Length: 212
Image (cartoon, rainbow, N blue to C red; front, side, top):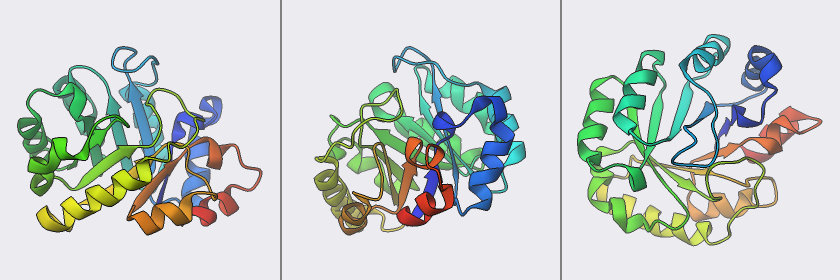
């Protein structure tokens, strides 16, 4: 299992040190949650802060857009060269066009699904994706409880991916901890995002290791 600590739960007063810490302790990616206060009821960070995180990181960035006007934000964050850039299918009228644009920018395209969105909504796009990000909480805030129905959704998505694009990864974000990691592995997740569980831990290395 690959682990992507979410800096949403980091100490922004010492962001560079926080990012360096989780990278040194075994993180595989640095997960960045970009929220615009419209698509979700929260406002987070812009490209200047993400650039500072990128400078501190020696692991690739995994940027998750929770915004309206996806094409604008794709162009805004593309110069930071994340490995993955995820946008929400619920907010995008022209997903194939945007997937193509992200790949043309040299970034691996991904689509995110809210808990209520059926995986069948993106079946026809799976052949063009490198990753699907399944939300296992309602997006907008860290520290929420894991939604158990996400496990069955992972299994159904894994079945579709096996038919359409076996190289496509499944990332899961929300409420992830040592208590549910075994079930997530069994269901077929490839990458897990964890914020409060890692950044709030007394022993961050042990927290990361418990998910890997």
